[in-house]
Length: 102
Image (cartoon, rainbow, N blue to C red; front, side, top):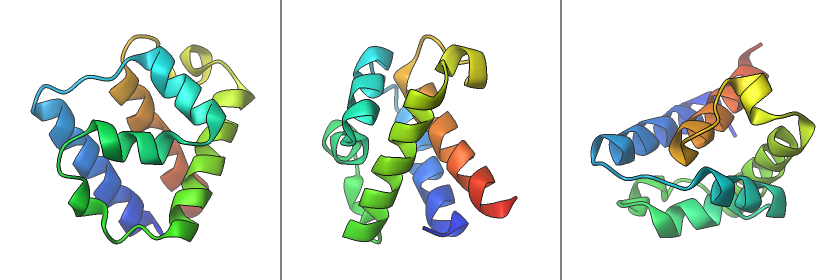
């Protein structure tokens, strides 16, 4: 998935935060570990049609990558996130962008 698509996901997540939505961090971790985080986010947050450009291959790639992020090291230690699920997802996406650009 290219970084432009990932930045659109960041904007979508940021809009959810701005609208007052929250996600439980433990549920985010469980979904990431299970490889189902992207689908769960689409069901849990408003305006998922913004992500209509994300195809099956993109979803599989992100789910696998986010699962690796969650399983690799403590999110608190690596990302400095320990309380909010949306913050953790934002960090996963930011890490995905960093992985692609250098």
